[in-house]
Length: 311
Image 1: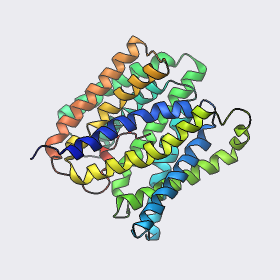
Image 2: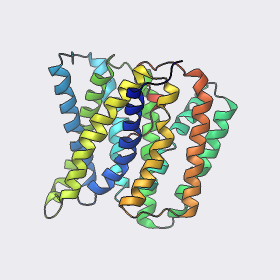
Image 3: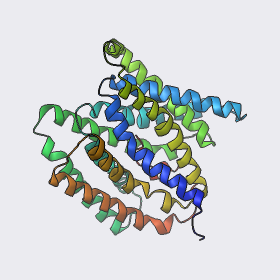
Image 4: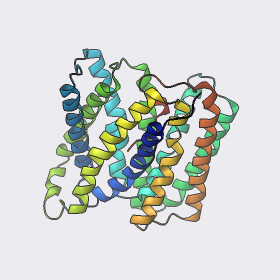
């Protein structure tokens, strides 16, 4: 196998930084903006922009009703219940802690594969066990505080929803073009989230200082960098690079998020939490390395089971 090109490393660097930085962007956005409305309008805007770009490039947006229903189901699991609830969780917990919990998604998918009878190597089973111990070290210290405990539990539930969506998506009848599929997924996820936000009256929270420059700027960053640039780079990588290289973002993104949270938000995870994060990252590394011999060729389709929680 030839060495990755500069373009591959550049795209991988984008995925490393952009998807790692979305946790910081979410934290800043929800400081003043209502969380569900922030997530919903973010995905609606990104979906409209992506669909418009595809239409201008004369890419057909026609899909069957079954494909549309599959996109809606994936959007519900991955974006509405997955990423959308990350916005809610980060109103109560640090961005770095959210990223540490999200880092267990690959291990949760391995657990789901094991439970459904898929043959998983001993190394991957060991890595999953170590990672879940790490998750406990991240979550348990905060369960004594009411507000923080709620945030932690919401974040764990969000990762479970993302894992279930990642596990189920390859088994759904999705559009062949991953960009078309993602446009419909973002539109569906955005509709669900915005409807929930309106039903809960979150539009009333837009008065006063809600539209603070920092929060609005973070929302814009999440739309363009997180949802458009990051995904475009990732989708391109899935087509041209070995999946064993692409999935390295799974243990880089949490490290980027922790560093940015400490640098820009003054977050200081406890030593026990950092030990838990190290166990999670190490476990994901073990799992990725164990899977690499099976995935040395460029990926095809969505590669959802290799996708980390791209917030």
